[in-house]
Length: 574
Image (cartoon, rainbow, N blue to C red; front, top):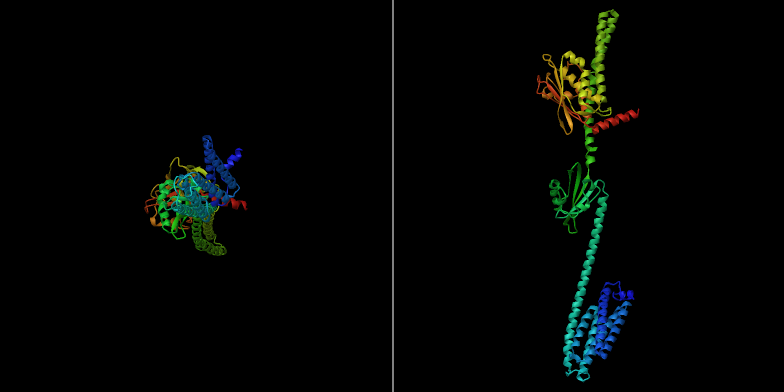
């Protein structure tokens, strides 16, 4: 029972939208009519009005039948039955009342309004004709005294009512059709908006799928207010943001002002129709930005799209490539120098050996022992010179190709070991060596770093002024980006500034008569650079002494790790 009552309180469902609208109105009218008719029948029964009670109960029965027809999905028949009930009830009340002058006549206007909402144009015209005929019958009955009307009816009464109800019908129908037209337009607009929204959702979904599958990238879309319309992509999280934190917010609300200052002008340029690319660092990363204006069908720029791609690693494989190219160019230059040395510096001892072998053969035939001994000494000196030259070249070739595993060691220990190796030369020159205490730890190949200090101190002792006691000072001045700056300072002959870079070149000797092969400072610079540092000299000129500065890392550098990996690989391969 409860379920039945619940069903009666809800209109039946129709697939057609217009039928569903009419059924809802019809259902509401029938429920109201039933409630009013039953209520009025009860009141009339209490007042003893048997005729009115009977009429109202009959009307309730007709309305209930119309309701059942509605639930049976006989919508048109249900409407016709309801409107017929209204017309018949109104005509009956007129007949038993005051005829065409009775106030119930105004119910025709209500029937016309209801009909304009529920009926199509042809059925509505037919209903209006039935109402006019009913009025004509009432006026006729009034003229012949068949009603209880105190007035004498005349055809003019019908004309007046017909005119009023006709105008009412015309206005109601006009308003109804206007409302239906407005509903149709609204429905079309809603469908168009829904289609646009669906297309926008599809477009946005495509953008999101595209953005979510671009490696190391993020896609950002802005409107003309510089508001984030879309923010997505795997790289977004790497910057510490999420699409929920960005979408819907203005640029200056979500991004640090320092970065806004870098990109705001670019975004506004895109919104004006410019398309371009730029590379901008963000924190410890480098991003390549593609700025693309998004236009509508008319060519107007609606949004600005930024495709941000993380190129940090690429810029680093690139920096490393450039470093390797520079290193290769340097080695090619050294190879050219080496070729020249082989053809010149090594050729000279060979010519000496070859020449004195001829002299030795001649002296041997003559039995001149003294000259033979002199020849052998000359040959031995030439051989030793070749040996030193070849050993230095071999040493140079090993640096950067083979390196021991880097270790952290106090720089004072490196200095101490180097000075112990030079103890004989220091004592012979009666040199004074000053070493700063508590110098920092450095990271690298210990033996190579000892070689650096040994070469620099040996170089300082070699080129000291013989009129002064050699004084060599070793210390540290400061740190640059975590790398300490060490120095080796002497009071020697000094170096003219125009030769400051030349002295690090292969086989470059400012004094050809000096001992050595001219490779020592080249080896020093190569060791420093392999460790990720740099070396330079400061000297105001001859007689002013010289200071060699060099930086060393306190932690392993990528260069050291690569060098060590090469060593391991070469050792593993036998």
